[in-house]
Image (cartoon, rainbow, N blue to C red; front, side, top):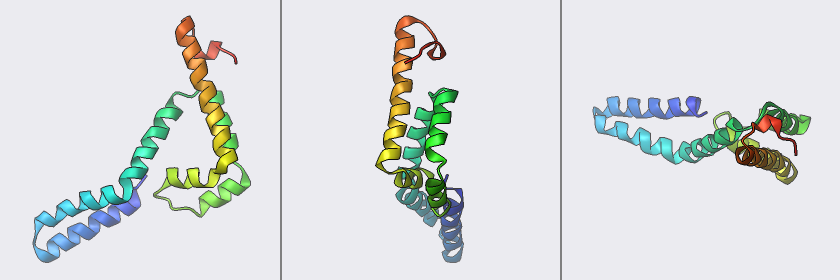
Length: 125
């Protein structure tokens, strides 16, 4: 999430507000935070929605896709406050395609289970 960098932004505007004795400057925090982090936050929320629908085996498949030495090495050097952007950036086309297959398969199982009145775990594709 954006906790570390967000705290830096907040501290800057609190400090500036106190220095200039102008509490209206605190509103700059929200504008700066949104400019820096809103896109990342929206991406994280969308990914969370996708991941929440996945089964344990689907999540295992995602972890297997991500947990390669190359990807882990690149992620360890990425910006802590931008998880989604970093992950999407290091996966490459093949990694994104594997993730898309897992997510699409999960969605198809979910649709089939809804139409048949069974749980996704009972479906096999």
